[in-house]
Image 1 (cartoon, rainbow, N blue to C red):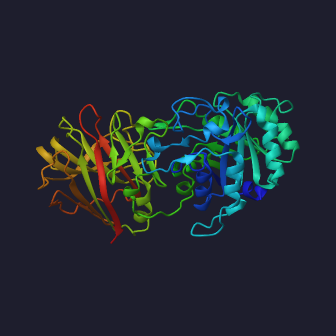
Image 2: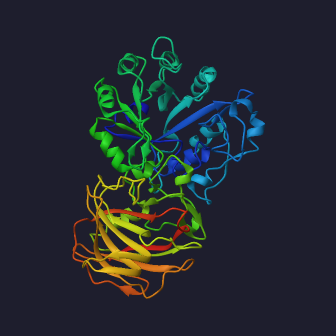
Image 3: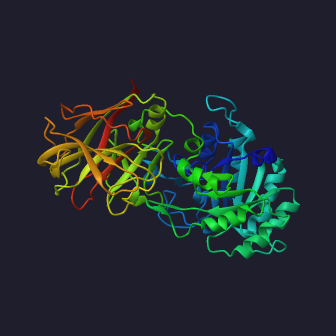
Amino acid sequence: MVDQFLAQLQFVIAHRGAGDVNPEHTAYAYQQAIIRGARAVEISVRTTLDGELVCMHDNALRRTTTLSEGYVSSSYLADLKQAMVDMRPFLGSGTPLRNINTLAEALDVIAATPAGGAFNSVGANAILFVEVKDAGAQAQLLQVLEARGLKNQVVIKMYRNGAGGFDPESGFVKIAKNAGFRTWCYFDAGDSLANITTLVKSPYVDLAGVPFFETVTGRAATSMSDWKITSIVALGKPVIVWEVHRRSVRDYFATLGVRGFMSPNPYWLSGGGTSPDLFLDQARRLDGMLPAGQQDVSNMPVWENNSLIHREIYDESMLLGPISHRVETSGGNWVMYFDMKWEGRLPNTDWQYGYMAFGRADDSPFGIGGKFDTTNPNGGGYILAVRPHASVVDEKGVYRQGDLVQLLRVDAGSATLTPLATVVPKTKIVADQNITCKLIVRPGTITFEAGGTRSQPVADATYRGPHVHFGRYHGNDVGGGLALSNVVTYKI
């Protein structure tokens, strides 16, 4: 099974059990990812003080559990069983709390996962990319997997040669390969190409791993350079990049020859169609709901009162992936209703606003403000901007003041926002009260309504991409949180 999976031109692995939507490294996450169509999942394993293998990425317990301190390595399994995996600060208050699982428990749940269904699940035949973070438990891991007869569906994942070095003769990679397992060695961005080449060319290594870490303007410094990635690809073995949240990132690395994509959002990455409903009453992230900043909890919105709310410190936006499939299959004719309101206080400037961006062709991060790449290198689109007590120039060059709603065009490679239409809402924009908006998009025109006022159709067909982002162009120091609710999208 594993060789057939790895022989594909491209393949996707559910990073941490689809950690963008599930409480990471839980049996629940692994099973849900497989049920949703993931053909492979990644499992990280650590050892407790009493020698039990548990599913956990970090040694420190603070980030992912209900415990405020402590470490896996200094905790007994019985103590860990009193805690829960808690990813609500990242994924929303409706994200379920789940027990910390032993590796045995996780493997039992995966083995019991039903095949077939709406997403054509592979069930118990999912490929497992397993890494033990503690070198002292490497032999124990192999024993557990061998005893379950899993050699044919496991790839043993490890940092470099499994001992932190590059000598294939002295690390865990040789032991795992000689035991009959497929092996994947991953590297740091700063590792020399010569050292990487020495290890990857070894017969003990089946796959190579390269890092990519997303920022709102592209890639973090800890991401590997393109020239080094293409050099590793040229060594002839399949290369896997991690962590890939977006389709646009997948497509980019595919042009470099990368074949494997370790993704916290595998269903989205694989192009799965989703319901256009954001299910805000569930108060949790869905497939394709991606904040512009992925690495820091301070970049995450919150879900409360059937709303998605931007309360981040500074300008933020979120891709509303579930809407993309409806737009993409609409034939260019679609309508979107939504409500927007500020919590507590409006922005105290006359130039900042809340917005819905749409028409973008790819799913890369988008935003307005200094933290983003305002030249929009990844393509243009439109913004429906809700502007309390604004002071702006409209599409006719006329200076306007007061509560306004504007349709703006953002062109690729430009930081300029071009006004296309401006209306005065009949409903005054006040804190803690919704303003209802409607977008009507047709192949040649865009019309919008806001606060009871309808625009004339705007004849502009420049951008008709499927991706939609909800954003706030101001920080907490100048205004309250911005809440989105009652979102309905349909084909017309």
